[in-house]
Image (cartoon, rainbow, N blue to C red):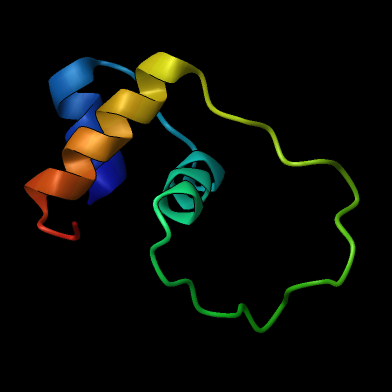
Length: 65
């Protein structure tokens, strides 16, 4: 729903990894994925500031924070 909201209101697509990174930075709880690995093959990519703001707005809209 967050991806759809951001695309509809901001005209940009955001990857689920960006959404997870923003949630992590806000201290929101995350659940362990069943397919998680101990070490990442590639380092996490940090989302651009514009996308961070759009994702935060969507999170507020859906009353997660």
